Picture 1 (cartoon, rainbow, N blue to C red):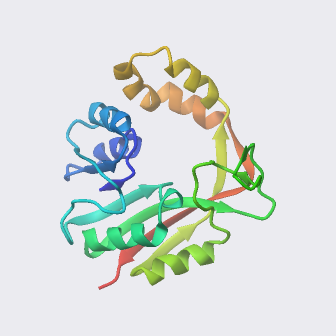
Picture 2 (picture 1 turned 135 degrees about the vertical axis):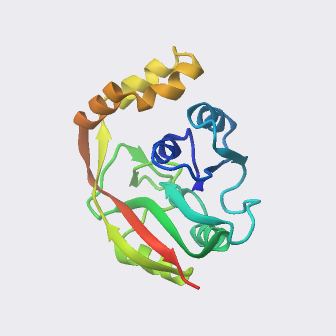
Length: 202
């Protein structure tokens, strides 16, 4: 399952290497329409990621990319723990903000933030790992790569306004676009991604 699946880019990549059942959960109808075009075989749920209709212990693997900072993190992790089978895996990513972080967005207090809709940006890897541990997950591996911004993205967003939705659904996964986005990325000062693979404790 992908909690906060958005337009389905992550599930699309997963679908290329597995034949297992895929589930995408998101509250955005527009994003889920794009997901359905990109990954037709995925089961789609338009639901709150902190309170899904999935059965207890029904999934083997949960993916969540840059979602936990937007929601109640304890409630979110408790929901993942409920839905995962014993020994199931969670691959989760979020944002780490160092003291000298800077970006052009500001929160209500005037502080630089990577995204205005974030409820929080974690101050340390250790605090995030403790959060996972408190909610029943054993951390297997963690890393903190730099967050980089593809300079081409503002242009792509403008271009999106003039494209049909069915064209845009496949546009981000086109190899030339992926290549240009990769080579145009620059580090954002003071921002890192937290990437963790963990296992549900019994």
